[in-house]
Length: 295
Image 1 (cartoon, rainbow, N blue to C red):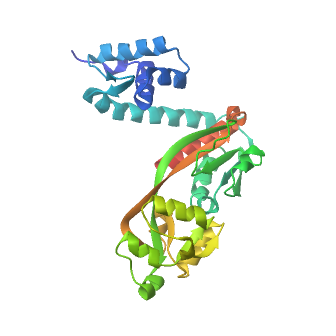
Image 2: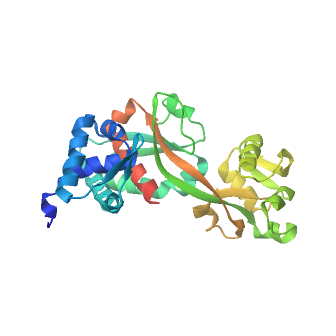
Image 3: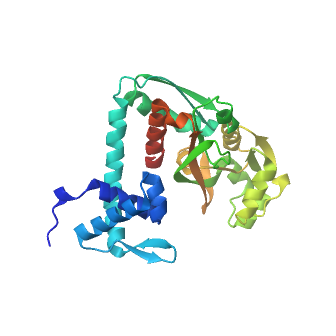
């Protein structure tokens, strides 16, 4: 039977997308603000319209069938397009004005946020954007910022967080440092080099040990709470330092150390539960999520 694309119901497709992303009818219903029977009927209606089975029940969860996985990629594109339409329309509202304060680490605030804020300003000329460069989540709790970009999900119940992407980093050192000290060939070799710590060196050691890299506290010869300062010290030849690959690979004079060794870290967007309902903050939150996910 030939399927008329003009007769496909976006409501049914949206219910399929939410169910696929949560792997649960109850989770998808909560996400869309529907009752579970309503959402189940919409997914069943889509399966009936397409004459295919989209999900199989496995234990207490749902798994996509081959047909469902193939459909998911196309429906995600439709969802992204719908999100862009909504953002564009919202940005044209004359009442979207005022100030939005965004807090991020000094590295993220310096290297990534300027081009994103330019996009926000182009789309929402009535808004003023303030950037607060800090690594402390408490600035949200003290209402010193409206939106935070963080690498750790906050535990405070009054905060709303969205995981927007998983970024990737590597370990880098200045070519001048490696020429003098040699280029490590195995993770064990890393323990015989100097390191630059961003933040608490003890926490750095714990993280590196978790990756199977046998570092000890005494390898951290230089330390800074500032990511920019730590990176500049590494550039000066003071030791090895982790960095987002987007920055590290584009920095002259810096080389990957054990180029196949990588670290992944999440990027969370966080806001206060109450201000998340503000139209201007919700709009900037969604624009940031779109830009960071596509970066």
